[in-house]
Length: 336
Ligand SMILES: Cc1cc2nc3c(=O)[nH]c(=O)nc-3n(C[C@H](O)[C@H](O)[C@H](O)COP(=O)(O)OP(=O)(O)OC[C@H]3O[C@@H](n4cnc5c(N)ncnc54)[C@H](O)[C@@H]3O)c2cc1C
Image 1: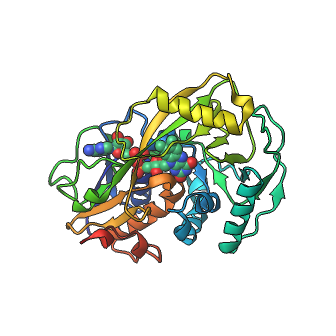
Image 2: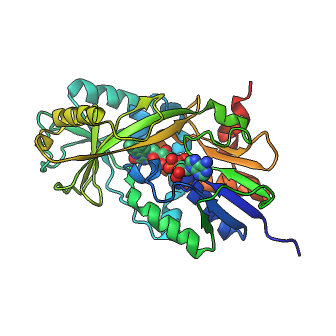
Image 3: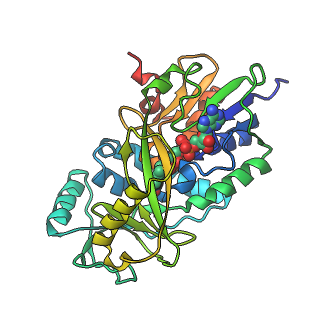
Protein backbone atom coordinates (compact mmCIF):
# COMPACT_ATOMS: atom_id res chain seq x y z
CA UNK A 1 0.00 0.00 0.00
CA UNK A 2 1.43 3.45 -0.95
CA UNK A 3 1.68 6.14 1.70
CA UNK A 4 -0.75 9.08 1.42
CA UNK A 5 0.53 12.14 -0.42
CA UNK A 6 1.83 14.84 1.95
CA UNK A 7 0.93 18.31 0.71
CA UNK A 8 1.96 21.66 2.18
CA UNK A 9 -0.40 24.45 1.12
CA UNK A 10 0.97 27.97 1.67
CA UNK A 11 -1.76 30.60 2.05
CA UNK A 12 -5.14 30.34 3.78
CA UNK A 13 -7.13 32.55 1.41
CA UNK A 14 -10.00 31.12 -0.59
CA UNK A 15 -7.65 29.53 -3.16
CA UNK A 16 -5.52 27.81 -0.51
CA UNK A 17 -8.58 26.65 1.40
CA UNK A 18 -10.39 25.31 -1.67
CA UNK A 19 -7.19 23.44 -2.61
CA UNK A 20 -6.61 22.09 0.90
CA UNK A 21 -10.23 20.94 1.23
CA UNK A 22 -10.23 19.13 -2.11
CA UNK A 23 -6.88 17.45 -1.42
CA UNK A 24 -7.92 16.39 2.08
CA UNK A 25 -11.14 14.90 0.72
CA UNK A 26 -9.03 12.91 -1.75
CA UNK A 27 -7.05 11.41 1.14
CA UNK A 28 -3.92 13.58 1.09
CA UNK A 29 -2.27 14.62 4.35
CA UNK A 30 -2.52 18.40 4.16
CA UNK A 31 -0.89 21.14 6.19
CA UNK A 32 -2.02 24.71 5.60
CA UNK A 33 0.69 27.30 6.36
CA UNK A 34 -0.11 30.98 6.81
CA UNK A 35 1.75 33.45 9.03
CA UNK A 36 -1.24 35.81 8.80
CA UNK A 37 -3.94 33.41 9.98
CA UNK A 38 -5.37 36.00 12.36
CA UNK A 39 -5.30 38.87 9.82
CA UNK A 40 -8.03 39.47 7.23
CA UNK A 41 -6.69 38.66 3.76
CA UNK A 42 -8.19 39.71 0.39
CA UNK A 43 -10.61 36.78 0.57
CA UNK A 44 -11.97 37.97 3.93
CA UNK A 45 -12.67 41.55 2.83
CA UNK A 46 -14.25 40.69 -0.55
CA UNK A 47 -17.87 41.31 -1.49
CA UNK A 48 -18.24 37.64 -2.45
CA UNK A 49 -19.98 38.23 -5.77
CA UNK A 50 -20.03 35.14 -7.97
CA UNK A 51 -20.80 37.19 -11.01
CA UNK A 52 -19.53 35.93 -14.37
CA UNK A 53 -21.95 37.96 -16.49
CA UNK A 54 -21.68 41.30 -14.66
CA UNK A 55 -17.90 40.95 -14.58
CA UNK A 56 -17.69 40.17 -18.29
CA UNK A 57 -19.88 43.21 -19.04
CA UNK A 58 -18.16 45.73 -16.78
CA UNK A 59 -14.52 44.59 -16.80
CA UNK A 60 -12.80 44.41 -20.22
CA UNK A 61 -10.15 42.06 -18.76
CA UNK A 62 -12.83 39.54 -17.76
CA UNK A 63 -14.88 39.75 -20.99
CA UNK A 64 -12.80 37.26 -23.05
CA UNK A 65 -13.06 34.71 -20.22
CA UNK A 66 -16.85 34.57 -19.79
CA UNK A 67 -16.95 30.86 -20.71
CA UNK A 68 -14.39 30.01 -18.03
CA UNK A 69 -16.09 32.19 -15.42
CA UNK A 70 -19.46 30.56 -16.15
CA UNK A 71 -17.87 27.11 -15.86
CA UNK A 72 -16.36 28.12 -12.51
CA UNK A 73 -19.78 29.21 -11.26
CA UNK A 74 -21.15 25.74 -12.07
CA UNK A 75 -18.93 24.30 -9.31
CA UNK A 76 -20.56 26.53 -6.69
CA UNK A 77 -23.78 24.70 -5.79
CA UNK A 78 -21.84 21.51 -4.97
CA UNK A 79 -19.09 23.42 -3.14
CA UNK A 80 -21.60 25.42 -1.08
CA UNK A 81 -23.52 22.29 -0.17
CA UNK A 82 -20.38 20.33 0.78
CA UNK A 83 -19.25 22.99 3.28
CA UNK A 84 -22.57 24.47 4.39
CA UNK A 85 -22.16 27.88 2.74
CA UNK A 86 -25.24 29.99 2.01
CA UNK A 87 -25.53 30.84 -1.66
CA UNK A 88 -27.48 34.04 -2.40
CA UNK A 89 -29.02 33.69 -5.86
CA UNK A 90 -30.80 37.07 -5.94
CA UNK A 91 -28.87 38.18 -9.03
CA UNK A 92 -27.62 41.67 -9.82
CA UNK A 93 -28.97 44.84 -11.37
CA UNK A 94 -26.76 46.98 -13.57
CA UNK A 95 -27.59 50.65 -13.03
CA UNK A 96 -26.79 53.79 -14.98
CA UNK A 97 -28.15 56.47 -17.23
CA UNK A 98 -29.86 55.60 -20.52
CA UNK A 99 -26.58 55.75 -22.47
CA UNK A 100 -24.79 53.35 -20.08
CA UNK A 101 -27.68 50.89 -20.06
CA UNK A 102 -27.88 50.94 -23.83
CA UNK A 103 -24.12 50.29 -24.10
CA UNK A 104 -24.39 47.42 -21.59
CA UNK A 105 -27.36 45.97 -23.49
CA UNK A 106 -25.37 46.04 -26.74
CA UNK A 107 -22.35 44.47 -25.00
CA UNK A 108 -24.61 41.74 -23.58
CA UNK A 109 -25.99 40.99 -27.04
CA UNK A 110 -22.40 40.73 -28.28
CA UNK A 111 -21.87 37.99 -25.68
CA UNK A 112 -25.07 36.24 -26.79
CA UNK A 113 -27.07 37.41 -23.74
CA UNK A 114 -30.32 39.32 -23.40
CA UNK A 115 -30.74 41.21 -20.12
CA UNK A 116 -34.32 42.21 -19.27
CA UNK A 117 -35.07 45.78 -18.18
CA UNK A 118 -35.96 46.01 -14.51
CA UNK A 119 -36.93 48.66 -12.01
CA UNK A 120 -34.89 48.30 -8.80
CA UNK A 121 -37.05 48.44 -5.68
CA UNK A 122 -36.74 51.75 -3.83
CA UNK A 123 -34.68 51.19 -0.71
CA UNK A 124 -32.82 53.04 2.00
CA UNK A 125 -29.96 53.38 -0.51
CA UNK A 126 -31.92 55.80 -2.64
CA UNK A 127 -31.35 55.52 -6.33
CA UNK A 128 -31.60 59.12 -7.47
CA UNK A 129 -32.13 59.41 -11.21
CA UNK A 130 -31.38 55.74 -11.77
CA UNK A 131 -34.81 54.22 -11.60
CA UNK A 132 -34.09 51.68 -14.35
CA UNK A 133 -31.61 48.87 -14.68
CA UNK A 134 -30.74 45.63 -16.43
CA UNK A 135 -31.33 42.39 -14.56
CA UNK A 136 -28.54 39.82 -14.45
CA UNK A 137 -30.43 36.92 -12.92
CA UNK A 138 -27.52 34.47 -13.16
CA UNK A 139 -25.17 36.33 -10.79
CA UNK A 140 -24.84 34.87 -7.27
CA UNK A 141 -23.12 35.86 -4.05
CA UNK A 142 -21.61 34.33 -0.94
CA UNK A 143 -20.70 36.22 2.22
CA UNK A 144 -16.91 36.46 2.57
CA UNK A 145 -17.40 35.80 6.30
CA UNK A 146 -17.93 32.20 5.21
CA UNK A 147 -14.14 31.94 4.95
CA UNK A 148 -14.15 30.94 8.64
CA UNK A 149 -16.54 28.11 7.79
CA UNK A 150 -14.05 26.87 5.17
CA UNK A 151 -11.26 27.01 7.76
CA UNK A 152 -13.41 24.97 10.14
CA UNK A 153 -14.33 22.49 7.39
CA UNK A 154 -10.63 22.05 6.59
CA UNK A 155 -9.84 21.33 10.23
CA UNK A 156 -12.75 18.89 10.41
CA UNK A 157 -11.20 17.03 7.48
CA UNK A 158 -7.88 16.78 9.35
CA UNK A 159 -6.02 19.69 7.71
CA UNK A 160 -3.38 21.02 10.11
CA UNK A 161 -3.06 24.81 10.40
CA UNK A 162 0.40 26.29 10.97
CA UNK A 163 1.77 29.81 11.09
CA UNK A 164 5.32 28.57 10.44
CA UNK A 165 6.58 28.12 6.83
CA UNK A 166 6.65 24.63 5.28
CA UNK A 167 9.79 22.70 6.25
CA UNK A 168 12.07 21.35 3.50
CA UNK A 169 11.53 17.60 3.22
CA UNK A 170 8.29 17.71 5.21
CA UNK A 171 6.05 17.29 2.18
CA UNK A 172 5.87 15.63 -1.24
CA UNK A 173 4.26 18.63 -2.90
CA UNK A 174 4.04 22.35 -2.20
CA UNK A 175 0.94 24.32 -3.27
CA UNK A 176 1.63 28.06 -3.37
CA UNK A 177 -1.60 30.01 -2.82
CA UNK A 178 -0.14 33.13 -1.27
CA UNK A 179 -2.25 35.76 -3.05
CA UNK A 180 -0.22 38.79 -4.10
CA UNK A 181 2.87 37.76 -2.10
CA UNK A 182 6.06 36.82 -3.93
CA UNK A 183 7.68 35.20 -0.90
CA UNK A 184 7.99 31.89 -2.75
CA UNK A 185 9.44 33.28 -5.97
CA UNK A 186 12.70 31.37 -5.51
CA UNK A 187 10.63 28.15 -5.63
CA UNK A 188 8.24 29.28 -8.39
CA UNK A 189 9.68 31.82 -10.87
CA UNK A 190 6.19 32.24 -12.41
CA UNK A 191 5.26 34.46 -9.43
CA UNK A 192 7.39 37.24 -10.99
CA UNK A 193 4.53 37.98 -13.40
CA UNK A 194 2.03 38.90 -10.64
CA UNK A 195 0.91 42.52 -10.21
CA UNK A 196 -0.78 43.70 -7.00
CA UNK A 197 -4.13 45.48 -7.28
CA UNK A 198 -5.27 46.95 -4.00
CA UNK A 199 -8.99 47.28 -3.31
CA UNK A 200 -10.83 49.34 -0.71
CA UNK A 201 -14.34 48.37 0.33
CA UNK A 202 -16.76 50.16 2.67
CA UNK A 203 -19.15 48.75 5.23
CA UNK A 204 -22.19 50.78 6.37
CA UNK A 205 -22.97 49.09 9.71
CA UNK A 206 -26.32 50.82 10.28
CA UNK A 207 -27.75 49.95 6.85
CA UNK A 208 -29.17 46.56 6.01
CA UNK A 209 -29.95 45.58 2.47
CA UNK A 210 -31.12 42.27 1.05
CA UNK A 211 -31.69 41.70 -2.65
CA UNK A 212 -29.79 41.81 -5.90
CA UNK A 213 -26.35 43.40 -5.91
CA UNK A 214 -26.75 46.91 -7.35
CA UNK A 215 -23.88 47.70 -9.72
CA UNK A 216 -23.67 51.35 -10.72
CA UNK A 217 -20.95 53.25 -12.53
CA UNK A 218 -18.07 53.67 -10.07
CA UNK A 219 -19.60 51.77 -7.13
CA UNK A 220 -21.68 48.72 -6.26
CA UNK A 221 -23.83 48.00 -3.22
CA UNK A 222 -24.14 44.45 -1.92
CA UNK A 223 -25.73 42.80 1.09
CA UNK A 224 -23.28 42.04 3.90
CA UNK A 225 -23.51 40.12 7.14
CA UNK A 226 -22.68 43.13 9.33
CA UNK A 227 -23.99 45.98 7.19
CA UNK A 228 -24.23 47.08 3.60
CA UNK A 229 -21.05 46.65 1.52
CA UNK A 230 -19.99 49.25 -1.01
CA UNK A 231 -17.06 48.63 -3.30
CA UNK A 232 -14.54 48.71 -4.63
CA UNK A 233 -11.40 50.46 -5.81
CA UNK A 234 -8.89 48.99 -8.29
CA UNK A 235 -5.47 50.44 -7.39
CA UNK A 236 -3.11 48.81 -9.86
CA UNK A 237 0.49 48.39 -8.61
CA UNK A 238 -0.41 49.14 -4.98
CA UNK A 239 0.62 46.25 -2.72
CA UNK A 240 0.22 47.66 0.81
CA UNK A 241 -2.74 46.26 2.75
CA UNK A 242 -3.40 49.28 5.00
CA UNK A 243 -6.51 51.44 4.66
CA UNK A 244 -5.96 54.83 3.03
CA UNK A 245 -8.76 57.02 4.35
CA UNK A 246 -8.47 59.48 1.50
CA UNK A 247 -8.98 56.73 -1.08
CA UNK A 248 -11.85 55.29 0.97
CA UNK A 249 -13.51 58.73 1.15
CA UNK A 250 -13.24 59.01 -2.64
CA UNK A 251 -15.06 55.69 -2.97
CA UNK A 252 -17.74 56.89 -0.53
CA UNK A 253 -18.24 60.04 -2.62
CA UNK A 254 -18.62 57.99 -5.82
CA UNK A 255 -21.10 55.75 -4.00
CA UNK A 256 -23.13 58.79 -2.84
CA UNK A 257 -23.49 59.83 -6.47
CA UNK A 258 -24.96 56.43 -7.40
CA UNK A 259 -26.93 55.84 -4.16
CA UNK A 260 -27.91 59.24 -2.69
CA UNK A 261 -29.36 57.55 0.40
CA UNK A 262 -25.80 56.76 1.55
CA UNK A 263 -24.82 60.42 1.95
CA UNK A 264 -24.03 61.24 5.58
CA UNK A 265 -24.24 57.60 6.72
CA UNK A 266 -21.48 56.12 8.89
CA UNK A 267 -19.03 53.79 7.16
CA UNK A 268 -15.81 51.96 7.93
CA UNK A 269 -13.24 50.87 5.37
CA UNK A 270 -11.20 47.73 4.76
CA UNK A 271 -8.60 46.97 2.13
CA UNK A 272 -7.17 43.88 0.50
CA UNK A 273 -4.63 43.21 -2.21
CA UNK A 274 -5.62 41.13 -5.20
CA UNK A 275 -2.96 39.51 -7.41
CA UNK A 276 -3.25 39.73 -11.18
CA UNK A 277 -1.51 37.91 -14.02
CA UNK A 278 -0.90 39.51 -17.44
CA UNK A 279 -4.09 37.98 -18.94
CA UNK A 280 -6.30 38.44 -15.87
CA UNK A 281 -6.83 34.73 -15.25
CA UNK A 282 -5.09 32.97 -12.38
CA UNK A 283 -2.09 30.68 -12.67
CA UNK A 284 -3.21 27.28 -11.47
CA UNK A 285 -1.31 24.05 -11.97
CA UNK A 286 2.24 22.77 -12.04
CA UNK A 287 5.13 25.20 -11.86
CA UNK A 288 8.15 24.68 -14.11
CA UNK A 289 9.85 23.70 -10.83
CA UNK A 290 9.23 20.07 -9.88
CA UNK A 291 7.10 19.44 -6.80
CA UNK A 292 5.45 22.86 -6.88
CA UNK A 293 1.84 23.68 -7.81
CA UNK A 294 0.55 27.24 -8.08
CA UNK A 295 -2.87 28.69 -7.25
CA UNK A 296 -2.31 32.46 -7.47
CA UNK A 297 -3.42 35.50 -9.43
CA UNK A 298 -7.14 35.50 -8.64
CA UNK A 299 -7.60 39.21 -9.50
CA UNK A 300 -11.28 40.29 -9.04
CA UNK A 301 -12.86 36.83 -9.14
CA UNK A 302 -11.11 34.74 -6.50
CA UNK A 303 -14.30 33.62 -4.76
CA UNK A 304 -15.97 32.79 -8.05
CA UNK A 305 -12.99 30.76 -9.27
CA UNK A 306 -12.04 29.01 -6.01
CA UNK A 307 -13.98 25.72 -6.33
CA UNK A 308 -12.69 25.21 -9.89
CA UNK A 309 -9.17 26.09 -8.73
CA UNK A 310 -9.41 23.46 -5.97
CA UNK A 311 -10.36 20.84 -8.56
CA UNK A 312 -7.47 21.71 -10.90
CA UNK A 313 -4.94 21.80 -8.04
CA UNK A 314 -6.09 18.41 -6.74
CA UNK A 315 -6.03 16.84 -10.20
CA UNK A 316 -2.46 18.12 -10.81
CA UNK A 317 -1.35 16.91 -7.38
CA UNK A 318 -2.88 13.46 -7.75
CA UNK A 319 -1.84 12.97 -11.38
CA UNK A 320 -5.41 12.99 -12.69
CA UNK A 321 -6.65 14.59 -15.91
CA UNK A 322 -7.09 18.26 -14.84
CA UNK A 323 -10.10 18.97 -17.07
CA UNK A 324 -10.85 21.32 -19.96
CA UNK A 325 -9.95 24.62 -18.27
CA UNK A 326 -6.48 23.69 -17.01
CA UNK A 327 -4.65 24.74 -20.18
CA UNK A 328 -6.08 28.30 -19.90
CA UNK A 329 -4.84 28.46 -16.30
CA UNK A 330 -1.43 26.80 -16.79
CA UNK A 331 1.19 28.86 -14.88
CA UNK A 332 3.79 28.13 -17.55
CA UNK A 333 1.85 30.15 -20.16
CA UNK A 334 3.78 33.29 -19.17
CA UNK A 335 7.24 31.78 -19.76
CA UNK A 336 9.40 33.89 -22.09
C1 LIG B 1 -12.26 44.94 -2.01
C2 LIG B 1 -12.29 43.61 -2.71
C3 LIG B 1 -13.51 43.11 -3.17
C4 LIG B 1 -13.54 41.88 -3.82
N1 LIG B 1 -14.74 41.37 -4.23
C5 LIG B 1 -14.79 40.16 -4.83
C6 LIG B 1 -16.02 39.60 -5.22
O1 LIG B 1 -17.08 40.19 -5.02
N2 LIG B 1 -16.01 38.35 -5.82
C7 LIG B 1 -14.85 37.66 -6.05
O2 LIG B 1 -14.90 36.54 -6.59
N3 LIG B 1 -13.66 38.17 -5.67
C8 LIG B 1 -13.61 39.40 -5.09
N4 LIG B 1 -12.41 39.95 -4.74
C9 LIG B 1 -11.19 39.25 -5.12
C10 LIG B 1 -10.90 38.13 -4.17
O3 LIG B 1 -11.00 38.58 -2.86
C11 LIG B 1 -9.50 37.62 -4.42
O4 LIG B 1 -9.36 37.32 -5.79
C12 LIG B 1 -9.27 36.33 -3.64
O5 LIG B 1 -9.73 36.47 -2.34
C13 LIG B 1 -7.83 35.97 -3.60
O6 LIG B 1 -7.70 34.79 -2.87
P1 LIG B 1 -6.28 34.17 -2.62
O7 LIG B 1 -6.50 32.97 -1.81
O8 LIG B 1 -5.56 34.04 -3.91
O9 LIG B 1 -5.48 35.30 -1.83
P2 LIG B 1 -5.67 35.93 -0.37
O10 LIG B 1 -7.07 35.94 0.06
O11 LIG B 1 -4.93 37.23 -0.42
O12 LIG B 1 -4.90 34.92 0.56
C14 LIG B 1 -3.51 34.77 0.46
C15 LIG B 1 -3.01 34.27 1.80
O13 LIG B 1 -1.63 33.96 1.67
C16 LIG B 1 -1.01 34.30 2.90
N5 LIG B 1 0.42 34.42 2.70
C17 LIG B 1 1.13 35.50 2.24
N6 LIG B 1 2.43 35.22 2.27
C18 LIG B 1 2.56 33.96 2.75
C19 LIG B 1 3.67 33.10 3.02
N7 LIG B 1 4.92 33.49 2.77
N8 LIG B 1 3.44 31.87 3.52
C20 LIG B 1 2.16 31.44 3.75
N9 LIG B 1 1.08 32.22 3.53
C21 LIG B 1 1.28 33.45 3.03
C22 LIG B 1 -1.69 35.58 3.34
O14 LIG B 1 -1.55 35.78 4.75
C23 LIG B 1 -3.14 35.30 2.93
O15 LIG B 1 -3.90 34.75 3.99
C24 LIG B 1 -12.35 41.16 -4.05
C25 LIG B 1 -11.14 41.66 -3.57
C26 LIG B 1 -11.10 42.87 -2.90
C27 LIG B 1 -9.78 43.36 -2.38
